[in-house]
Structure formats: C-alpha cells, structure tokens
Length: 510
Image 1: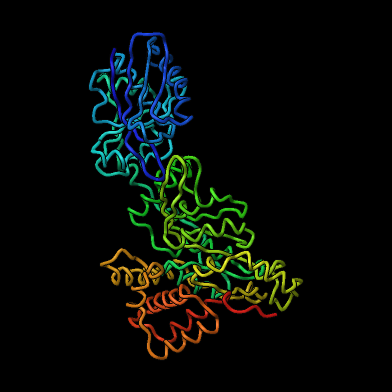
Image 2 (image 1 turned 180 degrees about the vertical axis):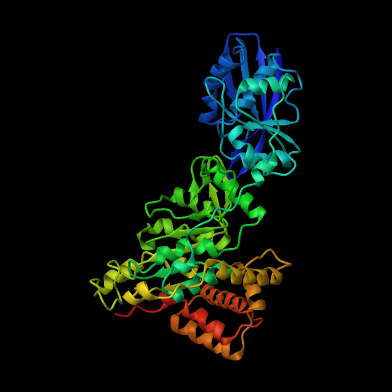
C-alpha cells in the first residue's frame, strides 16, 4: 500500500481554491474511484486518465486506486484535474520519485493518447497558487502565457504527459516560460472612433460625461438615429485599464471560456452586448455551480442592452443589485458566491413600439396606451438607476452627408482622463473612485449647492416628481460635468445640464 499527493486548483465563482489530490494504490481487485465532491467532468476523467497512462506512461496500475480531492467539503469543478491525478497515481505506484511534485501545482486535461489540453481559468488558478506560497506550476502550452502574467511564478509549459513524467523524474527538464513573450502584447487598434459620428452632439456629450464619471446611459430615439453606433464607441474614450483591472477582467473571461484562441489577456475594456432573448442566468450568472454572466463579463467595461423594452421585465429587474452594489450575490444549494459587476450600462430604446413617436417626417401609429405599455416594461426602480437619459432625434439629410467630422476619441479621452484624475484626488482616502459610486454622505460633502442651485433642484424634483435616488443622481452628474470643466464648485449651469438629462422622467406628450 502506498499513498502520494499533488496539488492543483478548482474554480468556484471567479476565484480558485488550492486542492490537494491524494492517491492511494493498494493490492486488490482493479478499481479506480474518485471521491471529494467531484463534478461529472472529474468523474469522467477516470477513463481519460486510464487510457492516457496506458498509452503514454507504461500502463495503468492493476491495483485498487482511490483518489481523494481535499478539502472534501468543497465542490470540485473542471477538467484540469486529469494531470495532477495521473501524476499522483504514478507517484503512489513508485513510478515517480517520492517528493517529485512537492512545491508544484499541476493543471491540465489529458487526451486519450497523453496530450495535455488547455483549461479555462488558469489565471485564477495561478493567483491562488501564489497566495498559497506555491512558486512553480506545470500547465498546458496554451495556458502558459496567461499564467506567466502573475509575478513571482515559475511556469513550465508542457504538451505531453510523457514530458511531464520525464521532468518530474529529473531525466529531461521542461523549459520555463519566458515572461517577455507575454509582455510583447500590444493594445489592438480599432476603427470605432467618435470622429465617424455625424451630428448627435448631445448624445456624444452624454457619453463623455458617462465615461468621465462612470454614469449609466439610456438613449431614446427612432431607428437609425445612431444609438448602437455611439454605444459601440464608448470604450474608445474610456481610460486604458490598469494592470489590476486587466488581470481581474481577464480572470473572469478566462473562467467563462470567453478568451479567443491565442489571447492571453484582455487589453481593451470589455464590451458585452447580449441579445434580448438572454436568460436570467445568462445575464446575471448562475448554474448549479454558479458561473459569471454578462454583467460580470462586462466588469470594468460596458454592458450594452439594445432595444431595452424587448428584454423580459423579470430579466431587467435583476439588474438592480448589480447597478446599485457593483456586485451580484448568487445563491444555490451547492454554493453561494459573489461576482463583481462594476460596469457602465448603456441602454437603447425606441420612443414607442413603431419607433416614430415625435418624428415630424413619419407619423407614429401607436396609441397612448400602447406607448405607455411599451415604456412600462422598464420599471421605475431600474430607470432611477440610470443617471443619463437622452433623446436622440433622427438625422437630417444634410447632417448625414455634410456635417463636419467631430472630435476624435483620443481628444475626448484626454478630457475624460483629466476628470478621472480629479475624482481620484478627491476620493483618495475612501474606497470610492468615481462620481457615480459616491455615497449619500459624499454627495452632501462634495456636491454643495448655492441658494440658486437649491431652488433649481427643488423645482426639478417637484416638477418631475423624482425620487431621492434621482436627487443624488442629478448631483453626481453635475459633479462630473464640473470636473470636465475643471470647476471646483457646482454652478447652476452644471446642475441645469444634469437636470436636462432626465428626459424619460417627464410626462408623455402627444
């Protein structure tokens, strides 16, 4: 009887947990069991590991084999357990030196002939390994560049089980991954630029304010007015992600399997645009072992919901917590997990079902009841959480063909970054980083009004019948407008512009 152990990691939510893989090989009828709350993918690994050892490692031991995944009360998910289980069995059957795997983490899926395939979530696993004091990892070739993003880790890429065995036996060492390869990545260029947008100066101004203060936006306009075109260009004026933001966003996309082949990290802010047929779990996240949804994939980026009233009301109402708390709590029988959701929401809708309410060139065919029902699909609490609401009129022929080119995204981004720097300096002793996330106490402290400003805001609240949340929202937007102007104090002009961006709070007129 002999036992051995290796180390690997399992993903739960957006974090990885270090798992000890214990193997016991003893005399008895040939059997192979895995215990410790494995999921179906791990249970199926028995056949993959058996075939792989038979084809690439001299055969599977004809013994009673028991594999325990510790801690036993933590659910285990994924196919990356194949390689560490295989090595633990080889070590327990005396085919590997006794301490061969000590101080290392092994991750990889095995093919039947012994090739090592890539897995999702390698960045989270590497971060967990570093936190646990592990400094070396053996990973699939395709995962090496992503794993090497973590400082202080020695990454050994491998393509075959036989190579790993030779490395652990000391016969032929694997070549450590050179981190400079991963550092050569450059931010890809994009052809989505604000200079391409003709007209719609108000909408462009709104997106600049949104980018500067991380405010949510709702565009209301007829088909073809440029709502989607503008929304897709918002990431081009957002500040570049810093290293920590890029790592966090990459980790989420890696776990969800959303990174493109050969893509090691996210270099630009995410832009997620789910179809209106998306399910609750698809948008918010879920499953028996909860996985990140679209709101988490948009973390540090933009979530674009086109044709907002076409989404089921039950789906839209789930956005309240992510928008308010910048995180979402998902509870299931097997696990209760938190996912980050710090994104900018950009939504677009038509003014009515036919799309031509208020259009002077094409009459609207909708009745007042139809319009009310259409807009009623968006709940008041959700609308309350959208700071900037702007109407986008249809473009005229002259605007589409003869309007001068506007500012480039780079020019706008400079002002956005300057406004962000003012906010960072203002909130330097708090956890707040932008105006949209100010607490009520911070609003009272940093958004003080003059007597004339109080009179204007009081009149707006009474006329539009706004809530307390909308009151704070207007002040936050006004603070961002002042930051873009380089003003220390809120002026009436800043407040008036912020009030003007609450168009859907006004009563419908026909």
